[in-house]
Length: 67
Picture 1 (cartoon, helix red, strand yellow):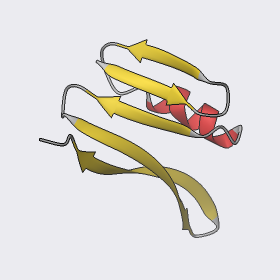
Picture 2 (cartoon, rainbow, N blue to C red; picture 1 turned 45 degrees about the vertical axis):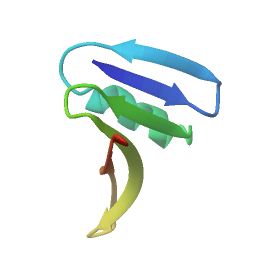
Picture 3 (cartoon, rainbow, N blue to C red; picture 1 turned 60 degrees about the horizontal axis):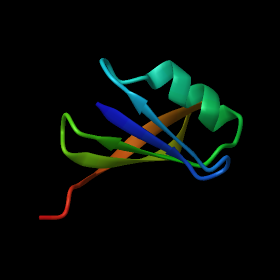
Picture 4 (cartoon, one colour; picture 1 turned 180 degrees about the vertical axis):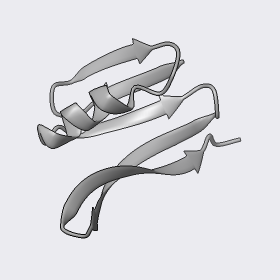
């Protein structure tokens, strides 16, 4: 289960199943600020932009849940 926290809209969503990469990229390209909490890997995922060969993509930096 993933909890998607959208700081831009103030909305928190729950997503079950596979990582919702396409949906999250859509939000990021709309310049929405999001954080994803993964209950599968027990991590907090923070997006960052990658520019390779003049192409913009998004990747995720993972931080473990605090103990």
